[in-house]
Image (cartoon, rainbow over all chains, first blue to last red; front, side, top):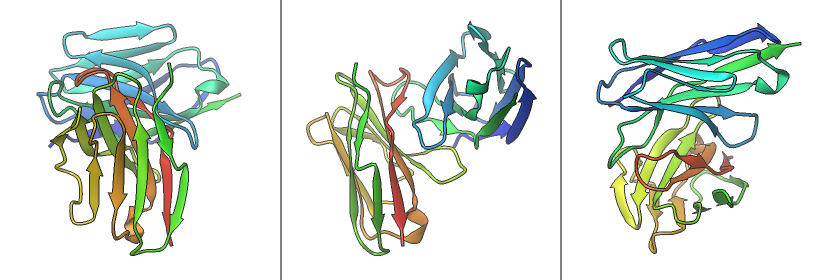
Amino acid sequence: GENVEQHPSTLSVQEGDSAVIKCTYSDSASNYFPWYKQELGKRPQLIIDIRSNVGEKKDQRIAVTLNKTAKHFSLHITETQPEDSAVYFCAASITGGADGLTFGKGTHLIIQP
Amino acid sequence: EAGVAQSPRYKIIEKRQSVAFWCNPISGHATLYWYQQILGQGPKLLIQFQNNGVVDDSQLPKDRFSAERLKGVDSTLKIQPAKLEDSAVYLCASSLVSGQPQHFGDGTRLSIL
């Protein structure tokens, strides 16, 4: 089955700096890659996603890049703000039929004031 | 639109007891998922329904876990008997159809004594 590795497990950045979280996946058939933000005790919230026919997607301060050859995708957050502090999860799935997500172990992002 | 509703929010039981969780997906969403999130880890898929049929239950421990979605709308997940290692947050998610973004509920936090 699919295996998703996520790094780093903890990331501390100064407010206003950029943050990058990286994930790799094992199944070359995977074609859908969402990113979720989870604050303590709350539900995972979808913040951005990308499909395998696209190399990059941007939404305001958040961007995701995908390298299908390397089976690698990354989340980029620019101009970080205190409210960006949370745990971020990457995930992968194969759409169509059984498309349950395989998640990484998460990255605890800490924004230092 | 109303989000995914789950109840109860918290449940404490002793090992070997039984417990049930309820989920009502976003209105009109045909696909429903149950995930288990152990503290400090990413969610892990337990079962996926498309309407009232099971699409994937390969990771459901069927000796103790069961789930149903009889009318293709709300769903229940049951554990009987519970073990200490079942302590986790049980998250329900739904999507309009398979392949579309998944939206999560707040989850049920289960503690086994």
